[in-house]
View 1 (cartoon, rainbow, N blue to C red):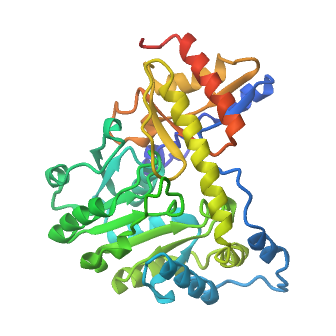
View 2: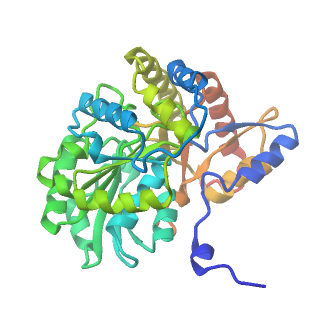
Length: 399
């Protein structure tokens, strides 16, 4: 029997999805599962965007340009200018989701064996993308005790080597919800400039900033314009995860031309996805105002509930729709599986994501979980009741 590739064997499983079989089994037993493990919003996709697909009169669904439909790229450039990012349609490559944008960036800017520094905890799939590109993640620890703020620059300096090619951030952050400030990003730009490395920025949660905190983009860092690659997606912005449309954006023409070769190799992004995404750019501000209000209420429900549970701590994030919580448990992987296999409260339980999968450093995240507050407030209240009762009876509790 032929052997699987070493790369395939070393490809990590998703900590967000690996417990799905246990959730499915719980449902078959009649248990209602509150899914707080995945960032799938229950917010309605804008009607105008859905209507654009519904009304599209296309007789032949052709390939688009490998960089994406021109009218969409022009519309995207207008959107970015409206949020203070001065680019043109010729700086944009439309991708099959933000995931492909990250793969294009890694493959265009790094060789196998090169290193990318990423503050941890970080979006779990960065590990998978790095593995598939032969790139090594060099994690730099950020602490729950200060809300996962950017680590001091001295910590970055300690792990930079001749193989370091990039730093990657997610802002606002998945899984922590931390929103990097303008001052933090300016500080980060100094080390990028000093070592002349790339700065990859995943900004898919740009619209989700709370408590009056503004979003500052890496594309606004004028001193490192040629070092920056912006990675984006419509999935969360318009609650349209299934259309699989993202973007790679850079003013570095050499990076752009290289990424285009990868874009040409996969031919084109999806036509109907681009039609929906182009129409979504016209979504009125009132839509986002309501969404933000909803998420603030959801965030507050989860954070306040967790901090009232004995031995638990959860910082108050200013962005995205995730929190990382520290719980009095021995092993988050075991706890999250136990919730689905052995616990229910009046026929209900909760599905969380073990934080271990969001760290690259082995052993970190053992007493932490990521919670996505994408459900409505009433469901979140019930889910928090389940969690509170579960912590009282979990065999591996540490208090």
